[in-house]
Image (tube, rainbow over all chains, first blue to last red; front, side, top):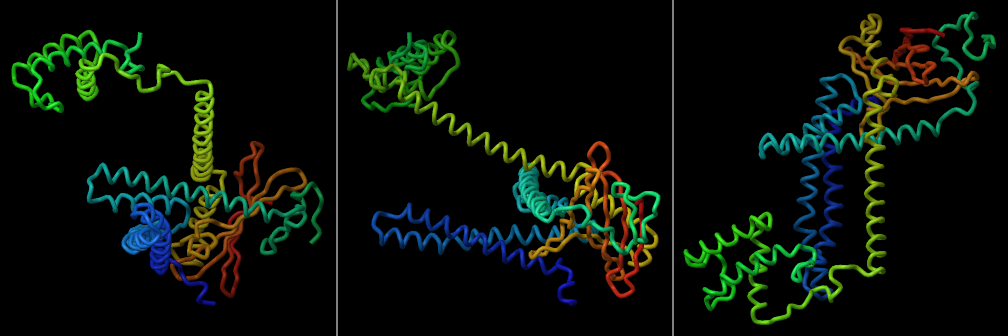
Length: 172
Length: 242
């Protein structure tokens, strides 16, 4: 039971790093295989070899870049969780912006600001999708009739003067 | 009247090109690809003066096209007639081409509008979620503030108190669980559940319900209580307006 109650936070960084690497390597592999195929000289043999070479050379680089982004993002996200003592969409938006800024730090302040804005907006969009999905799944579990919605038993019996449901007295 | 070389440009430009080309023709060297840099000094002066004179009438300078036109004008000295590049239609599209172009334009416009619409929807959703008090995130923030300020909860859990929602498989706990329902009077209610963890390591679950006001916005807690997750399962009622 303790296993499930473990805090996700510091361990999540490694997970995210690996997940991002996988995603980048697979996506980069697909992209580079097509690009290498198109850029190779004519002939199936050349094209297949060109495709393979491009994937071997470039896909791990894309994966590495993704991993850096994911790991840094997750690190900042965990930092925000620790500092704010609250987990909400603001954490990920802010850490997306900080990650974008930090990764552009070698290009000067203007580039940092630009990358930070792009990172923040990107993460805000992802959060927007997450919010819409949560809303849809909540819609799915909507109770059909309100009579199912008993008040929680932890609360004391409600006073008879103000029954909440259409003036019907509640017998408990 | 439109220029023959560039059907979409007015004829003024061609005059400039012709004049410059004429000057260049006088001092033409054997190299046909001669650029203005290679011209001798007095000639360059001439070109500049002449072109300045004409440019005053013709509009803004454009060196790249002008040089191109210089060459064209040179060729023209040899061949009297310059072929039009678009097959003699004078830059006009046929009806069929126009229909195809309009169709393409409409398709691209549709794609752009669709993209902007989706972006707008997403930004609207996230903006309403983050900046409005009656949203899921707003209720979650309010309720957590109330819990963190409550003395009984502080003592039971220990400070500082951290709050989080349902954990996903990827270790995210950003969204609290909630469900909405409508009661017999047609009023909407929302029940939510999220978790607290105190400085002592003890955990608790927060249950709450909000009711919408006459404006259709969730603004008041119907109840809000915290229950410890471990053995005594003590319940601390923060608000109960039933």
